[in-house]
Each structure stands twice: as C-alpha cells, then as structure tokens.
Image 1 (tube, one colour):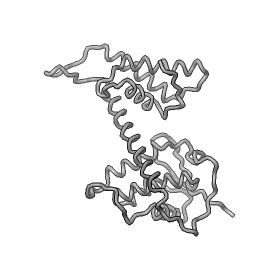
Image 2 (spheres, rainbow, N blue to C red):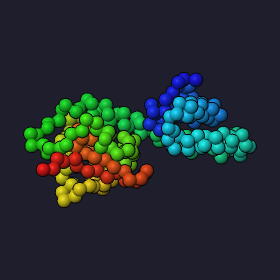
Image 3 (cartoon, rainbow, N blue to C red):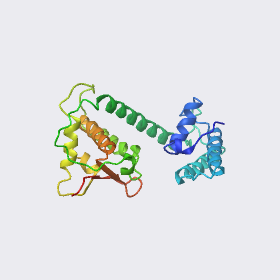
Image 4 (cartoon, rainbow, N blue to C red):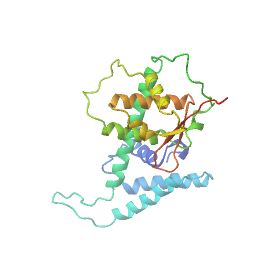
Length: 240
C-alpha cells in the first residue's frame, strides 16, 4: 500500500483514477472489492493521522461500499451473458467525464503556457490589486468547476471547421477587454451569462484562457455560493 495523502488529490474521483491508472485497470470493468478496500485504507490512514477528511471523500466511501454489496447480489444478464443492471455504470460514467475534464484542463493549460507571451499588453491596463496568492481569489472555486461551464458551452456551440491551431484574429487581450467591458455598471457578473455572448468555439477557448490568466494575475475574483451553482466573477480593482 502506497503512502498516499488526500491533499494530493482534487477529490474522490481523482483518487479513484489514480488507483485505476496505477494498477492499469480497465475503467469499464472496475474490481469494486479491490478498489474499495484500497480507498477505505487511505481514508482510515488519514483519520489516524488526524487529517480532516472532506465530506465528498466519505460520501464516495459509502458509495463504494454500497456498490461492493450490490456486486455480491445476483443480477440479470442478456443473451451474451453481459450484466443488464451493472451497478458500476454510474460510477464509470462519472470517472470518464471527470477524466475528460482533466484532459481538457491540461490541454488548455499547455496552450496557455505556449502562447502567454504572444499577446500584447497595453500601457493603459486597468490597475488591479495584486495578491501574493491567486488562490485567494478563487473562494473555493476549482479549475474543474470553471472548466465544466466552458466545456458545456463548447459542446453547445455551433459546429466549425476541423479545429487547427493557427494564427487567428481573436487575441487573449481582446477577450480580457471583452470580459472587463461586461462589468459596466455591474459589480459582479455570471460566468454563464458571459459565455452566452460568445459565438464560436475558438472565442470560448480564448475567453477561458483569459479568465485563467486574469485569475492568475489577481485581476478577477471567482465565487460559487453553492456546489454546482453558477460561478460569479468580480473585478479586483484598486479603489481610490
């Protein structure tokens, strides 16, 4: 058993994906009994070390125990001998969706790192209050929460020509100015309402990069009142 620390994982799905990747498990045929035992061991180890265990990890532990119990019960099978009511289906769907979001977030981060120095920053940049730690302005909003909203927007955007990374007219600075312009006479705006004003997938992607960069530069404050609700953003402007 590896010495794992819960704080190294973004959530329970992240921990489960670690087990699956480490043991080279087929995500469509998860050995629930084995993965549940390892998951519970990590939770118990954290408790012994007096580490506060987040409720989402405990909820997943109870879900895995329930699935483990259901796997022991007889289930209906089709003519080919496959389970009709496999209790793992819902968990597999969640893992696949989470894995896709992580991949997208990683790809966008790589694009941002490759192109962050290619966009012009004007001298008349609005003065913003700086913070030594950009995480202070996320207010418990994770990159996963933000990427979910942008992924939904990309899925619903009109179909374009096959995507290729080429020099385009849409710049990161333009989308930053677009974001700032939406705060006219408003203290906060909904991230979802901002995205609705975008038309193409490229606009959505560049705007996402602009949001990430403004958070990094402590120019935006993100807040989510409740889990799964819309994210509100606010300009962090120095007031006289």
